[in-house]
Length: 177
Length: 313
Ligand code: SF4
Ligand code: SF4
Ligand code: SF4
Image (cartoon, rainbow over all chains, first blue to last red; front, side, top):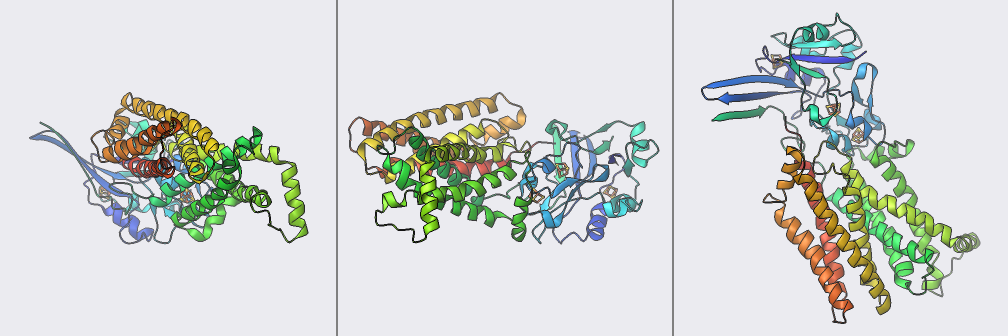
């Protein structure tokens, strides 16, 4: 099993509903976020291209944050989801320094926190909160090993890219273009 | 004109837009760890070489500084933890892929052993010293009997301790300035040099200082050599490495690195030490203070600058 997410940059309108849904679902403390929107503009004026990317932890297959954790608090759960066990975390920050995507933060309570792919929902067979709330249906979640999953179908006939592949972490967020 | 604009809605204190999570606590620890490593290494080395009589400061007096530095360094690391009450989780597991894990275990071993080292010389340093308890006297006799094997253990642990201060940073692939394997040896040599500076400062013995000064000059030369290699590596590297390099060549860390670390912290004290070896009078605290200052600034610069460097995407 390999959970992953596909994000359709052609459909995303940058409304940030996914960000707010996550903050509400996961009681993310005020002033923090587990997912965020990046707006990219490029081209030559007046022919400019703009896309939105809804980003979060990439749940890397080769996760440096897990390797460098001195307590084993950062670990890989079923389906490749990278998690932090709060009462094993000493808040040393090694994992934050090791993440090329800056996807983690220190929770005001002291432990390190980040996107969990809403594992509490996924375990019940539901989608992550951001996926369910998206008004343009541009987020696709599921198991890459299952050809009938939402994410496998979304990736099938489309071109995609991942972020900073040169960092070598084997990220599992696929951006469709 | 080709435009490229990236706007991010990410809002994370201390993480974005520039990572600045680790500060003086880590820099100070890296400095004290290297310094203690240096002191312990030379104490052990001269015992192994049978030079206890000729190098009394290196073997006995200066080694008092090592546990002090380690305890302050440990305190500094502890202050840096955000989830302090759970620090003991470090010692419920060993994770070989995590430098921080084996660093924590090394500290757990070397700190008490460095206290034992000092204790075993208490009677030599203070002839009227009395341990009061019989079992302490017995333990002392045991340590003195096995002094050479003990010195070997300390020598190896001091190597791990000092190399670890560099590897802690170089293990982070996400920060291009840190992710160079030369950082381990560089921090080792620099740490040993600050250890030597401390011993030389304390030493009252002319001939001992000469020996130490000669070793220190070699260490400084090796350190400069490694720094040149470090920057050659960045220059020949990918774009992110070159941007790391630019922080030191015209960027915000240019002065602090080249003036405070290289010129004032390495070249000046080396010149002063050469003068001293040639028979000129140089107040002994001057080169030592400069070396310690340079070593401290070096660690501050590396910790702060490294966090700014990142992959671009
Ligand atoms: S909710 Fe959907 S459309 Fe809105 S920003 Fe998030 S991914 Fe884009
Ligand atoms: S994106 Fe960062 S936090 Fe998430 S798995 Fe990869 S390295 Fe770890
Ligand atoms: S902050 Fe917590 S999860 Fe991150 S490396 Fe340290 S102990 Fe592990």
